Length: 126
Image 1 (cartoon, rainbow, N blue to C red):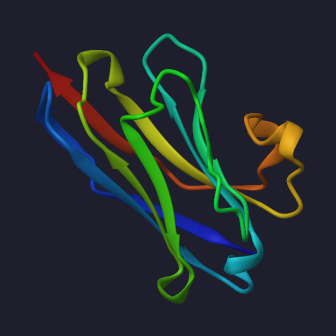
Image 2 (image 1 turned 180 degrees about the horizontal axis):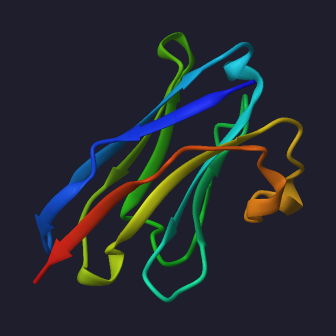
């Protein structure tokens, strides 16, 4: 059973950068597909980025492509989301997720992931 804990959220200004971390505990983390989602108040959960186990070509939502980057350090059981050029509309609770055997066509689907962190708040002020 994988447990995920996000950190790194906070209050920043528009244009700033922020790096979120997601540390996993449990076996075989390196075998999981990992992803980042976010949910803003009153909105549905939104896919941001995903990276399969040996995938050198991560997938991104159009809304964050070119601004956000997902990476993983399997030796540290940690996933990162580097965010640059933050906008006020990026304000949300950010979640990391992990799933085993997630097929490419389901990478953007929250239901494909079995394990979720508790979330970390990111607030971007103008």
